[in-house]
Image 1 (cartoon, helix red, strand yellow):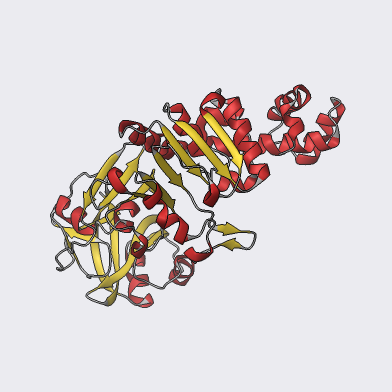
Image 2 (tube, rainbow, N blue to C red):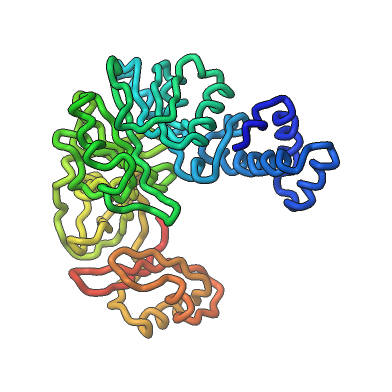
Length: 385
């Protein structure tokens, strides 16, 4: 982000660029230059206008006043997730927090909006400038102090809590080794020794072996999309595992180590929300619907009755087929299928490849679930309840 965007000329350019989003980029740039906007400022304004449009999905209407970098927007916490976290911390008595690795400020802004004073740090000066601009744009600057610094040297004296979202990406892509995160896992995991009330934000695929002793591990999904894992440490911990659905705020909780009973395929198949699967709460979900698994390693739950639950989708099982391309194709053609939805767990097959292999020419829609039953590859023809 160029600093000139924060000047009166920059704000004027942003206003003009907002009316050109969706236009041909070259034509939009030419239109701004005709209005007297210098080429470099025009390019920066058009980039911000594009990012603000994309950011609405994460930040709602406030995106139109915020500033972004491409990487910062991609990695930023969604507004609904950050707001819920900030509310929970405020309810726990937190009034000052250290945000270690604040990025463009998504969580910092949510903390401040909840009435929590924030000491934030990030190692990238451009990112710090963007986060600072966002705090000012949303009128939260008085509650926020943002510095360009390493999280490992941050001043933690007197804070009520610490929040850390370690950087897990580099220019070459994602970094999967926790030792190579920034800050590294050794520092992140040791934060609770420095600040007992610590929250760690991590990727949804984080290994359960990294959960600190005594912490509450929460997986969060937004509209069915699992977006993060959060480890609530020290006095902030409640139950061992939690799967939270947003925007409803409903949670499924449990031990994370319980196992569900195994039985045959039954009339209805339930596909638990990904947050419940990631949190290892499939057994707790099965209890909700009085269900069982057909394979101990596959997170599909089967039951005799259809029940409404926000924690999973329900399908009626129409046919159970020992998998082969020939058998499945015959079953689909018998149903005059022409459009096929493929769901899968425990199957190596590529859905697009399978659709092509079916060579369907009918007019009806069909849904097939590729899975395993008692270890055997199986196709289930289903329809949504």
